[in-house]
Image (tube, rainbow, N blue to C red; front, side, top):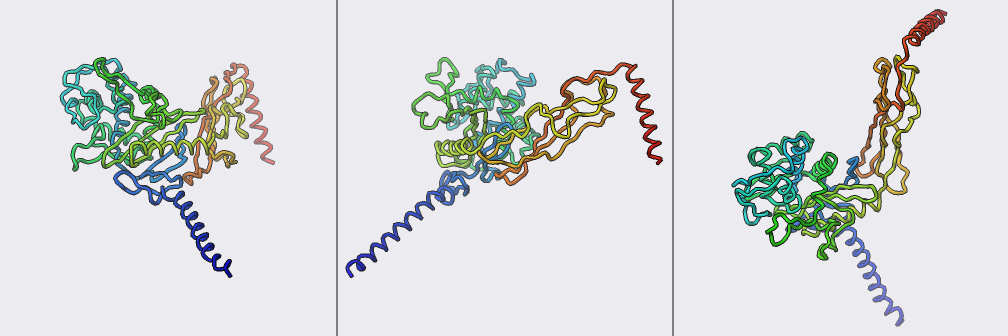
Length: 438
């Protein structure tokens, strides 16, 4: 009887403990999704990784393949991530020769007119600096005054450059992008915000890295002495950079991180567009509206841990591969009537580790014989082949197409050989016609 009397409370507290353990487990899985908050207690978006973000995306840089996404299409305030477009346009101007790194710029009053609360390097009207110095200050220190001066140099005015930013966004297919400033800093409460979705930011970042890989030479700089008289250098606030050596950054540095851009305003929260390279795999990430300046880096680290822990490259087709059924192509006037063909590069997908994904050829196209007239150089494009993979992250099929090219040169046959080939073809055709009569 005594045992029974004591058994009830024991079972009760055991049950309560079990319930508490279950509830704790649920919270550990769901608290950072359903109960997470962004900046100023704005709600985060529920997601499978428990990221405390309003929006996020993770893509593989080379292919653009999406590996994880949260609310990727909503246009949100950019803050200083706006400068990614400014940086891209300036790099484009340099690559086309309309601007040079060594060109000396005289600072205008409009650029020097920067509020004390803005990130800046305290340019004064009449100061003279090179394009490279101003660009480095923008990329490393997010300096608004340097950013505005570069914009004025390129377009003649800030408004003119903003128009160029919006035109460029349309050209790149960034459908959610709307720019109202070169810097992302809004002076008044009523001023319109520069916005873009996480998905479009990742697209822009990918374009920058593909077209202008030299961007990383600037974004990876941890410190920069802008003027010799400055008491201290500009410090890059991208705390994940592996180039940071100060002890204060060590808890946040991440091996392989070499870019790209942070951002913060009251309306945007703490944003970060990052990139990381390890083991021949580069990823691009975006997190938007996180609660603190460090939270954006913690959440980005979760994305990178997920990327390198869960995914690997899977080559469906190595370069210089002979595709079954497409071994040769017919040509005109060659020493031989056909020439062997191969793929010009590999087709590689990013897949879950230890998975056996279904990757198959879904389309091919070869140029007609009449369009392939010898002589043909080795590497001449003669067609295309497409492979498709079903992507779990997006639920969509991913298709990649590569060129089919000649594996060797095709020499033109001499007139004597062509003459007798024509005679042979004539009689062969005549014989076939006679056979078909019967």
